[in-house]
Structures are given as C-alpha cells and as structure tokens.
Image (cartoon, rainbow, N blue to C red):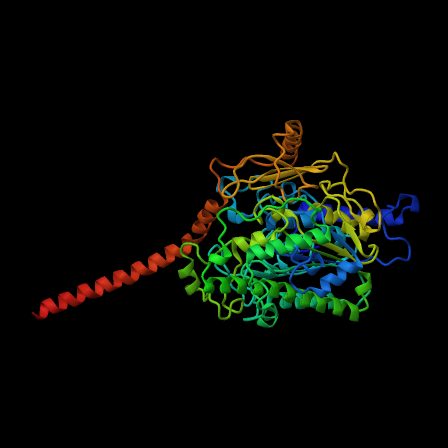
Length: 601
C-alpha cells in the first residue's frame, strides 16, 4: 500500500481487493458479466490527457496539426463527437480519475481562482476526498501496476499526490503548469516548478522537452516489469498545449505560413470542416467572433507575424506530443503489448484564451525569471509564448467561447478510445461525459464494485464501444456541471447554460444543442416551460453534489489577481526588506561620511 494513504483509503482499497478475491473464488453465477472471459488477457490501459486542446485540434477531428499516431488510434477504435468535460483542469482531472462529479470528488474549481472564504469546505478542498477511490486504486486492487507521469494539480503533500492516490510509480508536476524546457515556473503564482517522484521532491534535469521527458519516464516505469507479468494502467498527463506554448523548432517550422490568413480565416475553415466531418449539422448556424475581437487585417504587419508564429508553435507542440506518443506505442509494440493495450486520448477542457505577457507587472517578472516574448526563438527555451483570445475563439469552432466557460467551446472536447474490445472505425455521437471514463475502464478491466466507496456518477461506455447502437444516456437523464459559477445542464436534445462575468452576464439560456451546437438561438423565451423544468433539474443537481454559493461580486480574473498577490506577499516582503536594508545601509554610510567630513572641517 502506498505511503501516505489515509486509513479510510487503506480500508476501501483492502475491501476492493478482498471483494475481488471472494468473487474470483465464488461460482461463475456470481461473476460480473463484464469481467474478462476465461482465457482472455486483461488489457493494459493508457490514458493520455492533453491540456487545453480544442475539439478540432487533433488530425482525426480535422485539425491543422499532424497527428499520425493519434489518427491511427482513431481509425482502429472509436471517435466521440458528443463528449463533454469541465471548463477547467482540476475539476476535469478529478472526474476523469474517479468517475464522480467534481464537487463530490473534492475539486469544485481550481485553487488559483478559489475565494478564500470557500477554502476547506466540502468539495472545495481541491484534492481528492479521503473516501473517494481513483481508477488507479480500483485497478491496483485488481493486480494492475499503476503508473503516472505529468501534471497532477489535484492536491499537495503527503497522501494527496499520486502515490497517495493509488499510483505505484509517478513523476508528478504539482502545479497548474510549468516551463516545457526547464524545471521552472511559468507564472507569478508559483515560485518554482514542484516536481515529485513517488511523492518525494525530485531534482529534474536542467533542460528537457516536456512531452519527450514524460513519455521517457512513463516508458521507464513500464519497462520495470517484464511484459505479460501483470497488466498496467498508465496515466500520461501532458503539458501540451498549456501556456507556455513551446515546441522544438523542427516541429513548429513545418507550419510556416499556415496561419497567415488570421483567426477569422481559421474559424471559417474549421466550421466548414466541422460540417464535412459531421461535428456540425448541415445548415446549423455558427456565431462569429466577440464584438471586441481585433480585426486581423487591421493589425500592423509585425503583430500579425507574431500572432501567426504563435499558432505555428501551437501546432508544432501538438505534433511533438503525437511524436512522443508514437514512441510509446513503438515501445509497447516491441514488448509485444500494443495489441492488448486500451488507449484513451482526450483533453481536459477547451482552448486557453489568456494573455499572460501583457498583464500588469509581468514584464518585470519575466525579466527576473529569464523569459522573453519576441519573434526570434518564439516557443523555444526562455520564450513565454501564448495564443490569446482570438485564436482561442477560432480554435473552439464550431463552439462558442473557450476555456473557463461552459459554453460548448469550453467543454466539448475530443475523445478517442482504441484497443481490444473496441469496434474499429466507430463514430459515437451521443452525449458522453468525463465521469464516464473511470467506469468504462473499470468495466474493461473487470474490476469489481466497491460498495464502501461513493457510487460513481458516470456510466460505462463499453456497450457502445463494442458496437452497440443504444444511447449512452436516456432522453430524460439530466447531466449537470458547475465550476466557479459557470454552469450547464443537458437533458435530451437541450442544454441550459449560465456563463458568468467577465465574459458572460450570469443569465440562464436555453439551446437545442443537437440542432444548434453553436448556441446561437436562445429558446428560453419561446419555451419557458422547458427552461423552468431544466432549472429545477439543475437545482436538484446543485443540492445533490454540494455546490456552494459564490461570494457577492465574485469575478474569476479579479480573484486570480488577488490570489497571485497573496502568494507573492512573502517574496515581495523579502524584496522590500532587502531594499530597506540596502537603503538603510546606504543612508548610514552617507551619514558616517558626512560626519567624518564635518570632523575634518
């Protein structure tokens, strides 16, 4: 049992293991029908989570980046077109790894925008709650080796890092992101890039590239046991394409000129491809850009070149990640395990709109921390690259808005599942959710239920993955989501959505999400009865999962600024203290010098 586990976790994991042993000794009549049949090898499982990748970023979804390895998995397996996740990383990761709603799992939002008065409330502690089991714990109890490499962002310290959540081996970044070329922070909220191996602080190489380094470490963990000795569960949480957007030039240079037409051109092209690929119904309307979006053609030539290059690096970062994934697949093939490995490829939320470079005080912070923002070397070591809001709006096509918001651009994401038992060439259009991943994996692995643990909110997708034609959810099954006041609920063909400031107005709207996935026609006035009924469903959802009311006047951007200042107070106090000492010392020396001169006079 991993060091740092709470007694409750130890009890639940032990109960899982004992239950599995008891069922294995029982007569066949008591075995679960979805358990592996006699003689069938349990599959290895690899979950690959991109960070901030939009629905259409991958080649299999019509993206500009070259992703031949992921595209191969999509051809050999299933591509989901109705998959939704949360609009932020921590809630999505909690749901992905537990099968529970983010509030029930313990991660209602992200710590960077959490109001101080909500800290330590149930569901808002921003780490997996002690009574909740992760998929790693469930599979480890079934004899799986459990391995992890990448971003964690699900708690800090003993018992809250991956080693305390069921992972036997792990290299984890305990932050929302970090530089991709060196072990250092990418924003003032963090003083460094905290990396941990198996729960202990670890010294990272002075230079690396994140996608390659993470795949290399995960491959090393896999190779620590001979092929076939025990199945493994591997969780690869990539930094691609989170800020800072960085990539080796050999990848970025392959997209020279690809984005010179600007963001309006890209959004139009993606919308057209979305219709061709069936991601958008023929004739369905799609909104353009926000009214205050900048006109590409009106920008000075140097600004257009900088913006276009930022997207070349973005595409290069995706291709670099795909190349690293290809090396992982090659290693599994060399071990003779590729054909028995179930792959899941997805993203935690929609594209990132933030501009960190031009925030107040960032110029000084960047100089102090060795960062620059210039065309030469953009995306390379020391470059704090980002794509910004207009590109994020373009990438979110055919959806509306982007990360942070529960409009479709923020939560509709790619999902590819491929491997043993998955019917090849499948396109699955039904509504699916991030909480469905854990029950699906447990189902394929033949994991037994754990009555002592909270029941999962998600449903297994195994039946549709194997070729079944039935819906994943019934037309009257409501599905809710809430993160920092941004909220939505799906039921049947309809969705209600509330986007909060600074971009939204906090008002509920109703959309026919099947015929209008671009969320262009608010039906709340035309169908008040449906809106009222779905708002009642949402109230039930809030009560069931424990959504807490936000403080009056809450604004995510203002809260982030306040939290960054609080985190920087010790550093600022130290700097002010040092400056005071220097000035005081200088003043004392000047006073001594004047006294000595006066004495000589």
